Image (tube, rainbow, N blue to C red; front, top):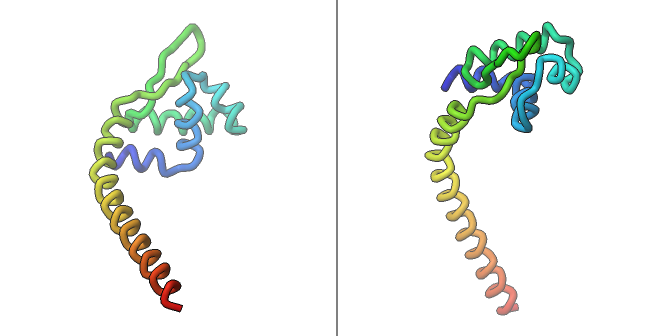
Length: 111
């Protein structure tokens, strides 16, 4: 999981992942959409490949990159435990805010 977070921490790599969510792209297409040169883009894609987030397929003389779903499923599973914690906290906050509103309404009625 550390390699996933490390790879996604860099803004250009995160942007590449966002681009690849729409479908497979070549290095040139990614570079064009990011406004980077191809060597820079290739380095970012290599990091994403090494982290297991993307895979590459050679088609003729082009390298086509696409996302791998497994690491993102693992990330989602890991985050699920935190969602539960935050949902509980939001529920408590909602209860507290409703209590404040009730007290505010009762206070206003007494004036």
